Image (cartoon, rainbow, N blue to C red; front, side, top):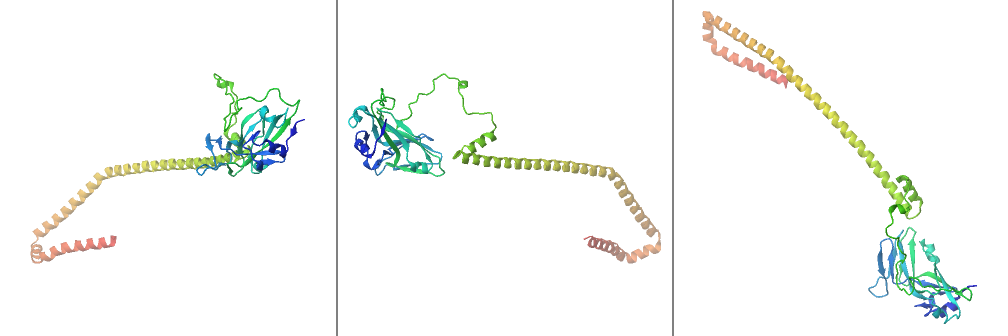
Amino acid sequence: MAELLNDKEITQLLGSVIENGDKDCVRPNSYVLRLGAVGEFHTTGKEFELGSGPNDKKGIIVSPGQSVALTAFETINFTRETVMQHFPDCDLHGIVSPTTDLQREGVVAPTTQVDAGYRGTLNWTLSNSSSEERRFVFGERLFRLSILKLAEGERPDTLYGGAYQNREGYVRSERKGAPTGMRAVDWEDSTTEEGPEALLDRLIQSGFPWNVLGTRFKVIGDQFRTVTNEYAEIRESIERLERDVEKTARAQDGLTDRIRELLREELPAVQDRILIRAGAGVAVLAGIGISLYSSQPAREALESYGIYIGLALVVVPTLVWLIRRRRSS
């Protein structure tokens, strides 16, 4: 049965099976791997490089919902030649899991395995599912490596020899992509026939951080709907006001046309009345003049008091005009 190595056995592996190892990272039945220099932010594709120099970046910031690929500081050497220097007729198999500190902080990381015969740098991925950003510094202890000793009957016939053998640093996935020439109908995706409201509810129910994003989208949608309704009401009010103004203008135009028509109808009669009154006035004045001219006493009185009569004819109408103007004001 496979045996789990203890701290004493793990310490003997430092420098050979665990290259760049540190005895301070040895635990009772595991070795804690440290954060290496290179990696990549999955959400943006940005690569980074850390170090201990004065001008080097010292750590990374992982925001909520962000995923980052990391590299171990140590290099693992599970080749049979190296392992047999410590455990003759045995192979080693490793199980890599995140420390409990990461789990307590809401950082999700998968557990993986290291096959017998593998040599290279271990890569893994962290995803921040918390509501706060998490920071990790170069050389920080993050992953726990448990090592199993495989005895006779447990050793594999074929040791690891895959695409990641003898690779150091950050190595992107070597998984082969889809074959070329496939049609769009050959693929199945997550698209459904549900409406946007149902998709938004599903997003909210999917948990952090998508629930925060979905809730925000819902609030924005409600606000947009409110603004749209208010705009429709304003537009309807403007159109109604325009119709009222147009009706009023048409009514005013009709009234103006009617006034003009009445003026045109009444103008001849007014002109006739003015002419009749003017003619009557002239006739009266002519009659008075003839009467005065034909009467000797009237002519003598006019010659004696003409100046006073003339002044009276000027002053009296003027006083009447001033009195009427004062009353009208």
